[in-house]
Image (cartoon, rainbow, N blue to C red):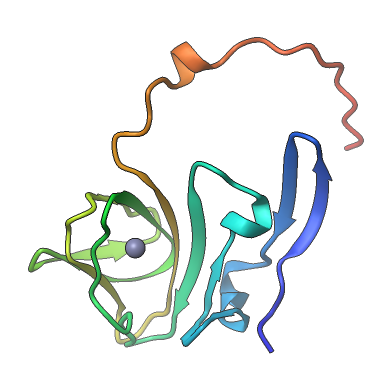
Length: 147
Ligand code: ZN
C-alpha cells in the first residue's frame, strides 16, 4: 500500500500536510508511478497542482508528455539527472528549476549513480494576473508562536 500524506493542521483558510523526507518519497505511488505523490486534492488547492516524485538511479519517467493548457515548474530537491524538452537534453541537480510551456514534450531521467527527487507545480499558463506587489495586503493577526 502507498504511503499516506499526514495532516498537520487545517482551518477555514488553510491546510498543512507533511509528505516526509525527500529520501522516503519512494514509499508513495500514484497509479503505476512508484515514488510519486499528488497534493492538489489533499491540500484542497484550486489554482495549482503540486506533486513530488523520486526516481531511483538510472530511471526515466515512463513517458514523454505535454499538456493542453497547463505550464509546469520542475524543481530538483536532491540528487541529479537530466531533462529532455523538445529534443534538447540538459543536466539537472539539486537546485535546478525548469519552467515548461504546455506544448513542450518533456521527460526526466535520474543519473546512473544517483536518485533524483523533484517537485512539480502545474498551473494554467497565463493565469497569473497579479502577484506580490499587487495581490499582497496587510492582514490583522497577533503572533502566537510556540517555538
Ligand atoms: Zn505534466
